[in-house]
Length: 66
Image (cartoon, rainbow, N blue to C red):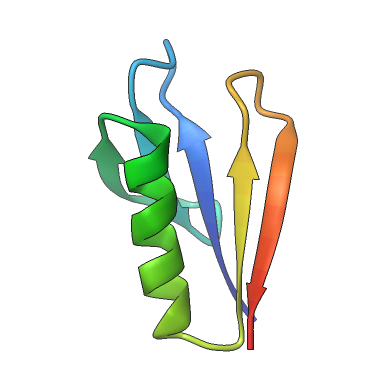
């Protein structure tokens, strides 16, 4: 199962979409933009999971796409 993550950058001024918690795909200005992009990527790679982190790097939400 592929996994994408939405995580803040170092100073939480932007949000990364990462694949497999390794490679950052893109930096977005808002968390909602990053979540939307991660969900679109996940829908094209089912089965897939999107893990969304908060500013303190705690898991906030997990979404599965089958």
